Amino acid sequence: MDRPKDQLEALLGDLPEPGPGPMDAVLLKQEIHEGYRLESLLLDLNGIERVPASIAKPLEGDGPFPLVLFNHSHGGDYMNGRKELVRSSPYLQQPSFAKTLTDMGYAVCCIDMWGFNERGGKSESELVKEMLWQGKVLWGMMLYDSRRMLDYMCSRSDIDASRIGTVGMSMGGLMAWWLAALDERIKVTVD
Image 1 (cartoon, rainbow, N blue to C red):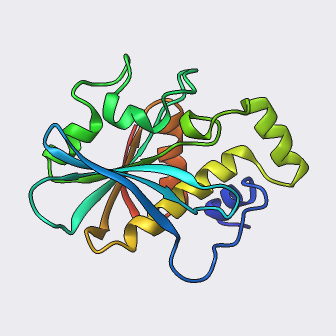
Image 2 (cartoon, rainbow, N blue to C red; image 1 turned 30 degrees about the vertical axis):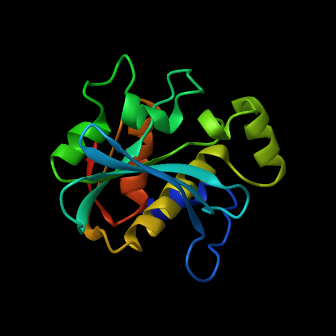
């Protein structure tokens, strides 16, 4: 009988093979927000399209910092995406997760999921159909991108790859649970 992890992996559809060598990352800007440093990047996570990412780090110290992977919610707000990390949402806490977690000494990262914010333009229905025609599953590709984001973060010298957690609400909470089930690097999950 297959292990539960193998059964979950089988549901994800055809996933890209990670490319050889280091991941291509372009730092677009770096700024100071409410006591933390915020990096905006474009990452080649999947070989299909560049993925916008945000990384918040404490102002004090150079790390390595423990990491929290923040999974943004759905909420029907396709323009929010990773901006939720910094701006929060009406149903999430204030101050934002970026402020709260960096104040506690964590680095925190978030990507725009397929169809959200800078990755918008196509509806979920269009994305699902397009991916199915190619043997892919939208949820599987979302998980793939998040796991590749972890690969990138673990390659950085300012991140402690032995101390990783993930958090999310709604779609983000479901993403957090799936990530923890599939990726042994994640030690803590909060929904």
